[in-house]
Image 1 (tube, rainbow, N blue to C red):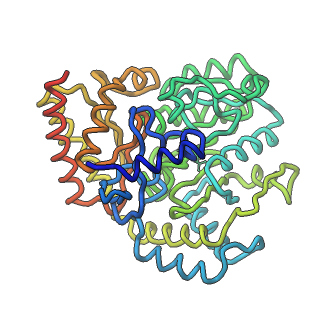
Image 2 (cartoon, rainbow, N blue to C red; image 1 turned 90 degrees about the vertical axis):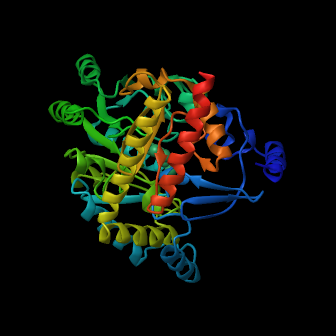
Amino acid sequence: MVRERSESLYKEATRLMPGGVNSPVRAFRSVNDTPFYTERAKGAYLFDVDGNSYLDYVSSWGAIILGHADDGLVNVIKKAVEDGTSYGVCHPYEVEIARLIIDAFPSIELLRLTSSGTEATMSAIRLARAFTNKQGIIKLRGCYHGHVDSLLVKAGSGLATFALPDSSGVPEDLAGHTYIGEFNRIDTIRKIVKEHTDISCLILEPIMGNMGVILPEKGFLADAQEVCRKEGILLICDEVITGFRVTYGGAQHVYDIKPDITCLGKIIGGGFAMGAFGGRREIMERLAPLGDTYQAGTLSGNPIAVRAGVHTLEYLRDHRDRYELMEQRVELLRNQIGRMAEKYAVPYRINGTTGMFTGFFSKREVNDYESATGCSRSLYERFFKLMLQEGIFFAPSQFEASLITLCHQEKEITQTLEAYEKIFDIMRTEL
Ligand SMILES: *Cc1c(COP(=O)(O)O)cnc(C)c1O
């Protein structure tokens, strides 16, 4: 596979931008590779500047669900652009998307749009602190909630790969208000709550996506909710990945919990920059202009992003059967690949649910931060590079979810399974 033009673009990029990229994981550093440069995308595929195509399991980190350049969406956007790209004042589509999201999430009574998931979690935390008049927050190790100062403490994603517990530049005072619990370990949350009285909220990914996919064990989320209710701590569910992906009403619908605040992003912008947070009326009413908690955005509710979002959500709402298909496809991958891993004796475990999965190079079950960090990054690196050679793009890090779209259909699943068979056969000889 020739990547000449990509290589020269990357070289130029590193002269102009830190690490050559606008978001760290795109540099492919944790798999000791260099990025390909995408020229266009269609359906489940990316096409690079050297004429290579890749079956895409990153799907813009989950922002794409209909498939790239979906025809219906493209038409909506063309029309939207002709009507103006930003107004900075109210428009009817923001009312429409608010109604769609509130109808899908019974826990959300009032909603505010932002331009990213990071802004949503940042604002949700400010609001929780304002509402409870407390400063502490509980975050779970390995969960990633965007690059918010208080949340860049034991984060997952790019940071997990780089094995940096923290980011520089985060004031110690601020990090000192963040208490770290463990996903799937309710005792760690109970302990923090018992020892500290200044806690405003617990923020979590209901299904971990940023350490790779880790599902909540039975009762974990309900227990977390109960601890919060009892102690007057707000539960913030970060559904930036899971919202409208694991089912129309998100992970909170699947696990039957009712968070006080929910954060959304990725899918709701239909591939444009958008996030949102919403929750109980009395909490959300603390936001300006009603209340004393300031939050704003020049491009919040951008008409192009909102119209792309409305189209995406309406499509998903009217085609719920697509979720069953996405569930079946992930199931099929998990079963078949699991069987292959056994056949070739490759230490490989796949966690997954509707629309998302992660294969970990691990001998044991991966169900928490500890077991996730225990898996083999060098095997993942080999896997990543072999897959890329086969024209399949998995995330350039072990600690990410693989995210499918409605365009990942039988042909794509077959292509994936064939590549796995070939690659496990190679890897077996190298173990
Ligand atoms: C991607 C992500 C964010 C951050 O969203 P951005 O739009 O990248 O700022 C927050 N939380 C979770 C769970 C995410 O996966």
